[in-house]
Image (cartoon, rainbow, N blue to C red):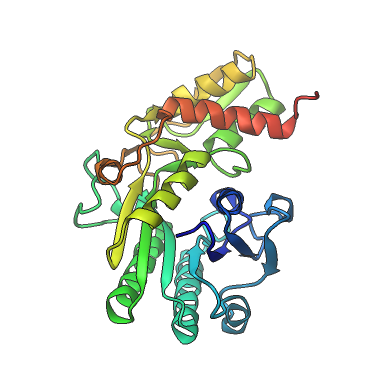
Length: 313
């Protein structure tokens, strides 16, 4: 399906978007990337992809990039708490972008959409959490916006003839990652190799998936799940604690700092201390990750360290 497809990736300069662009180009897709570069950077976008700069909250800008010759839209663009500390603005911007994308797709007759959601839609759920877990009770504005986006996509799938694939991510790690725990630890240790501050009590336990396997899973699901609305968790069967992440990062940097903890079971307001997604539905479709959560964290750490100081040949 994707080998000769004409695809658009919104947020294609971000962590998952840039790797998805590379992956689909390798599969033979024609790839168009759109981004406002609020988080991603131009150097992440493969040179073989066409690139547009656009604000997807602007309907006119959306009309420029979504055209009738597209086979599928991968909608990855989203704002997070690092973009806006104003919860109302964060919620409105994310849902406005998604609504604009869907409306323009309906106007031009493009009816296939893949959307990257998040494990945060579940809130503090029992683990491992399956896709049919209910009720979804997110505890962050970001999670609220993702759940609202899912509802919009469901409406267009069931009422406007769309086919949709929704992916609820675990924590995705790898090259180009910014603003999360692994790059945060690396930056702190580069600044002070003797001590490392860890948010919360360090016992937060979550699933981590390497971005290379994430994009492989996305392709597999899009090509093999054929319901009107297809919702899949993407993650690993195992989890890694924040202190274990610190151990892996310090090991890869050949450091032995003293750890300090800010305390409390949450690293920040809205943090879900325990998260592990069920991937039984994904496995039943014929795909599973080869890397454990620990292995994904280690490889992601190596990726980031190589970005900072590429090994000379």
